[in-house]
Length: 253
Image 1 (spheres, one colour):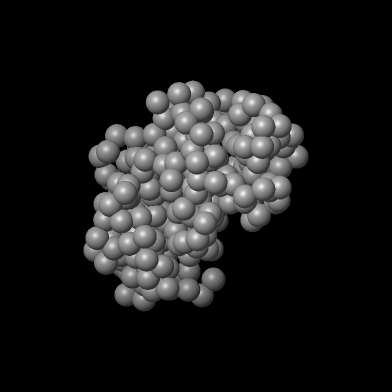
Image 2 (cartoon, one colour):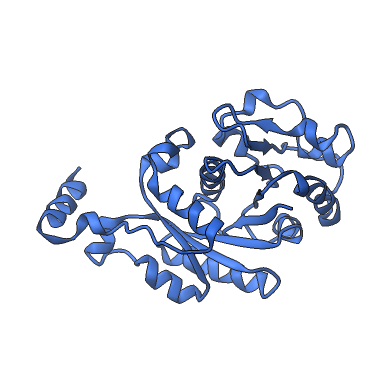
């Protein structure tokens, strides 16, 4: 039975889809069977992030509207054979209910170890559909006050219905070290929920193809799978004399 986890944020543009995709890849590297499901109807882009948009034959809407079986809408990752993607489409011919989504998720849950659900931004119908079929939630937030406030609203909306873990994304270690950016620990304290991990602002971790170079996502996947939380330290390289030099170089780059 899969762990069904909705990856949400409240606010758009915080890297939620990228986190979902890279976390799925990191879990698959552990030989776990992982399904990434795009539930953002209309603004779907998980297939683009995973670079499988040219392989889409059937999608989630086709499954819901009984044009294909769930297995026919799955796209296997070329590099990690235990990783699959179920893409979405831009248009649905009828209103998709939370119950219809849950039926698809439940049909697939016995096949996978993890089912990561990419949730649409906002707290409207799409959010409620995605949350209704999950057993856990990961709230993605960035070190900006607007993102923290929206994450807090998302957590309030989730209430006590699901266990909630928080991931702080796009942390600039140099800015945290110089006191110009909220630290991940300040954000965890403000939101008051379980810390799952921290991800640095780094071009390498914003591209699925370079996941193998990202220890941060490997740490995050291990935290999720084992329950033992090891917070990736984005600030360490910018401490001390050489760290101050790195901060200066980065600022002037």
